[in-house]
Length: 258
Image (tube, rainbow, N blue to C red; front, side):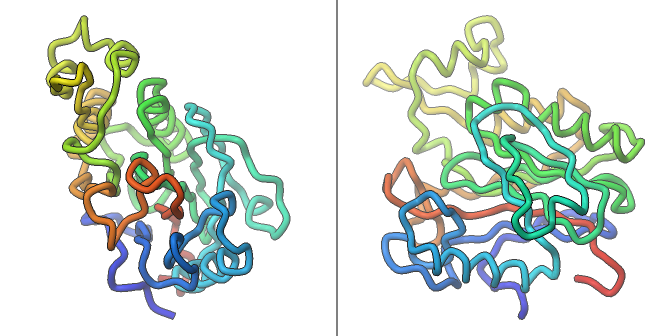
């Protein structure tokens, strides 16, 4: 089976690496999870989620390893044991691997997924970055883990930002500004726009890009899609509350693979 034409493909040049982000299109789930829901804790029919997950694994020719995401900054290293059916699910918000055929996978429905690729496919990683994880350093932790296992420098790693809630829809309170230290950093404060309601609109992709550049990534790519703005293409928890989950995945291509 080929990749669905609506899925997002990183516009990077990462040799030996496959990567994508799914959209809500192309699966078997019924409304309000229509149709390519990959989340098992959404209220969707388990059989439909299982079919969607099997379809995804078949399409990429690799084994997605899902995480129990908790909006933190923990990174786990995946190996062959994690790709075995019934393997324990890690409680973490990011993963890295050096093993071909294992897809580092994060689920999202407004939070920002970020994929990482080391030179020559030596390692890959995926991070789930809502505002809590981003402020806690999940992207920096994932980048460090990729560099450690690939024996490379941050400037050699490529990063791609998938779809997330955009700056016109992500309304936040003062606690979010405080978590990012906006009061003390003018550049951070510029990523928040005050509203008459006493709230702010936050630019999650730009906040992430700023942190990636500060950590050594030369030119983070992607981040141009708003999940909350396009109900026909993306799941959005902020918009719908009861909804499905998309996934962003990155894997090292095995010999003869995709």
